[in-house]
Length: 257
Image 1: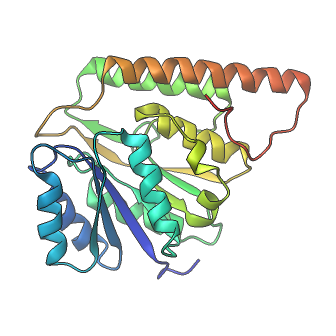
Image 2: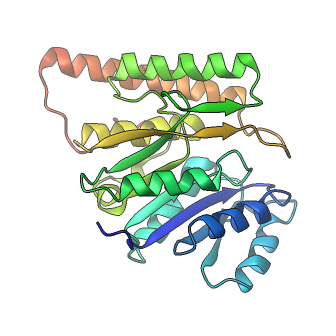
């Protein structure tokens, strides 16, 4: 893949009016050749209308409006579908709240362009060189334990499977049954990594610095944490059972929930 591979950065939004302008400006400055797609879930604070105004002044910024708050997972699946239908070669996940630094995006894309052609480049907080800024201790412990649980139970060769700053090769996304992906939140990130791993994809991690958002409130809720726990447990049990039975993995991804 050449260094000029067509790249789309997908930025899902819900009430991100305070941070979206800075995120778009930083992203466009860091990777000026990349396009950006804002996927807005009818934000009550006017984020969608703001995105439209910003897009009107920049032909490389696009906006996808959805009818309501349908969740992070569906926002990304809709964004993936939009990207694949327009011939992009690299597809990026990136938060709008400032927690993902645009300067780290250049590092992720540089790794994606290497000759070994990884299918997923994941920005990791929990590998050497990775870091978090302004996170309370309990959040760090929860994240580390959750990722350890996913790694041990599901056999995922990742230290930060819940991380949402990542680059996919479009070819890898095309091999997945995207309409079947129903998971949300952190669970969606684990789900996508697990599906790719089972499909024989090449997954790599690079260190990033994650910065706690300075505006708005975290989207993490108790229901999101519980969903991640029970789905990861189910997928891990399926993984171990198939290992015991000696079954071959297919390209279907985790069993439909």
